[in-house]
Length: 76
Image 1 (cartoon, rainbow, N blue to C red):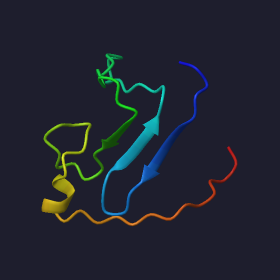
Image 2: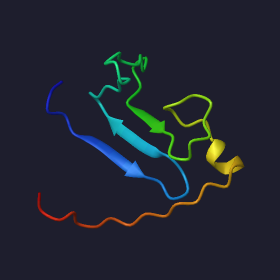
Image 3: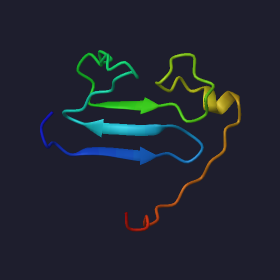
């Protein structure tokens, strides 16, 4: 992969939104999901999606709640 910037947004009460022009998502075995040219996808945080790891909107049905504010991680 190149050094293209990828942006990941944690949506309140919803998924992780991944945006960029050159990213890939793979399973634990290293198999890459075919994103069919998408430059943005949403990844499930609630655990209720039937299309894991992708969001299918189930967070609304299961009333998933998680509001996040950015903070600084401690040094390694």
